[in-house]
Image (cartoon, rainbow, N blue to C red; front, top):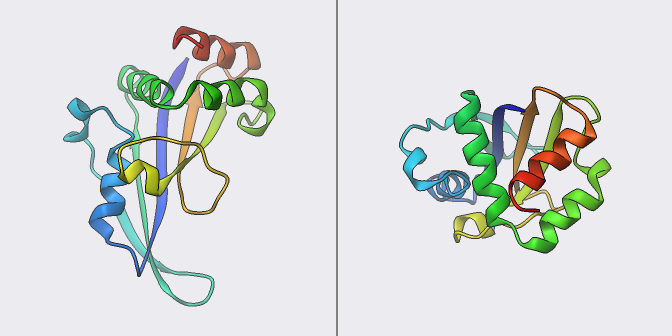
Length: 143
């Protein structure tokens, strides 16, 4: 049901770029991290400050499913319940589930959902985009 995953974040000029990359890679199981290439480009922020845009994708459905399972297992039970109970906040109603993972926590090796701007954005692209399929995905992870 998961076809691919897309990860993106912003590294501000005051942040250590390598630490931000580490935070992103901490969303991936250790055995898959070496196969990931983080793409980067430069841009200007809202106030003209330099920022670096970082992103990568996992396009192999088997790997995408394994990474999503890793992320769901790494979240607290309360956060997974939050996704399930407030699905309309995370699901676009068609073909994607969106999660925002706290960047600072990810760098420290723990995953937490966040509503702030300092996040790693995760887009879970679904083959069948309907509510029961997302519930089924979470159920298969034990939730």
